[in-house]
Image (cartoon, rainbow, N blue to C red):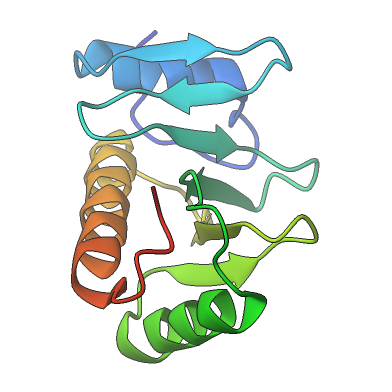
Length: 138
């Protein structure tokens, strides 16, 4: 499917999948019906909320055993202080995860979506590489 602009009127999981597929970026729909972008490093989930006002990019990694909640929170706080594009947060189950909310506004060019998703994954990888001093990720 070719689209000139992603808008609140046409945004959907299937449209976003088609944008990534057209750019030869592997995608799949998981058992929950969520869209996963599968680059070479790690997976990125992309969600469209009911409001259709934004697209959420999301990822997380396996945690090392025995890492304290304090170490995880210190890592998340450091990432949130030093990296503008991503948000790191601790889930109820104790995992550190990352996301970015991309507003659709008056429209979102498909190339902008792809470039932003790539940048999101690059910044997450950089944050984990440079800031995970306590080896909280396995």
